[in-house]
Image (cartoon, rainbow, N blue to C red; front, side, top):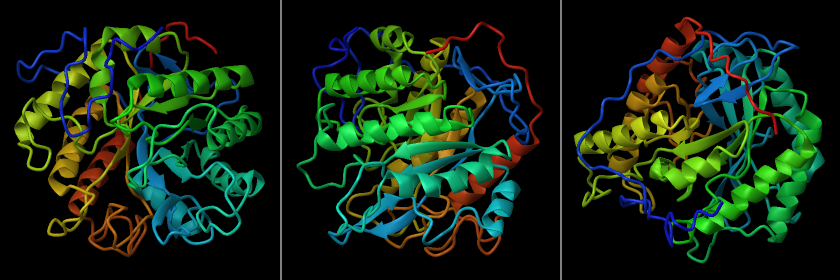
Length: 413
């Protein structure tokens, strides 16, 4: 089914849009049903159970609702052009040290999103001067450490994340780098296909706002069919258009019908302030109206039983720093809206970023520092505003009473 009716081009992330045929309303905040969907400290994997998507819910191997709460992990790495890349590596901040393992347990996280580069790169490019086997060796260490504890590890291919050069476009399925990533995923499906605690996040923020939605759909269709051909039943996660921010696309009936042709798929929303009320200004949004708009969209998404995870939220710990490419008010309102609305509707969240402390603000920290990670000096010390909010959510999740998930028959790819 084509998504051509959605729009000739995607809505820009800094503006709201009513998608053709969406029946969208701007009549104030709707009442989002309050739920307590969640799970307590993760149970060890069960050999006879797997993760499933049933309606809008993620159901764990134990049959309980699974609300993923956790963080992105990686490390800042200088690329050959002198810029910083969002790369998972173990040569700097090793996420599997005893300190890190204990800190993740103290936070109460059940979900880690690993920011990886999955395509081969030239040996003279520090961005990722290794191949798939080296990457898999590193991933194996994280996956073995945490999935054995009942923590989901979602591998995210960050290769096509726009770097702001101005000449970037959404990849096509015959792009050589995209083909390399497809080979990575085929190997990953073979390697981790029997471990349901490994999820596959196909590509990070690969669609640019100025490109047609059809370009995004082509990549998603190809990715889904590729995973289907592998036979692996791991959950597959696709980032939404407009670099993950176009939550509103999920209110369109055409999208809803198309999405329901896919099995065990979750949609990834990055809440950095990309939805504002009609006529609003993302550079200076009004928080109440912003939350009302998000509330409306989430209510419609829940009603349509669309499964969602918020794969990224974050804002700088220092509100006085203003960066050319980042917008503190919008990012903060995006995070606050997601924290307030998503979990009560059964949509989990991964904060950006656990161990990516950086003075460039490309990594938004949980601490009031450019140097401290989620574990330093201890998990609950020197928390930023974002850190305080996420600590509270994480502790609530850790203490939540498990709830049985739906028992409807699930599908298989």
